[in-house]
Length: 123
Image (cartoon, rainbow, N blue to C red):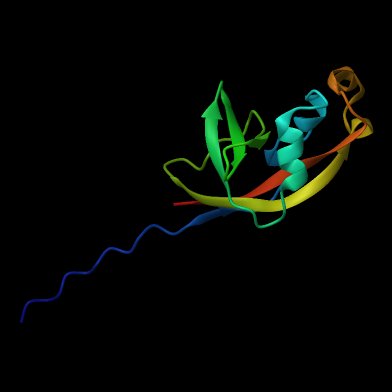
């Protein structure tokens, strides 16, 4: 009797949970008052689906309508060799101008704003 071949298991998922260090916390704080991203963030709730898109050298966080919700930190990159599977809004945090280092406050246009922290799945 010939042994059955062992079926190869799919690669396990890699999860990235919401984390302040992986996003540009001041992204929305630098936007003009009537920017569409501010409305998209205000409408976002935890659990809403999102996706990622690489634009102009940055990984952008987009909602299911394609509106930008934020961007990931410059030093962030997807896990090596992994493909993006899915994402959702993992958390929303309130950030303030006073939370930024003094040297960067001159770029901030509002006193406080919300930032989307994504929950991401890769395989």
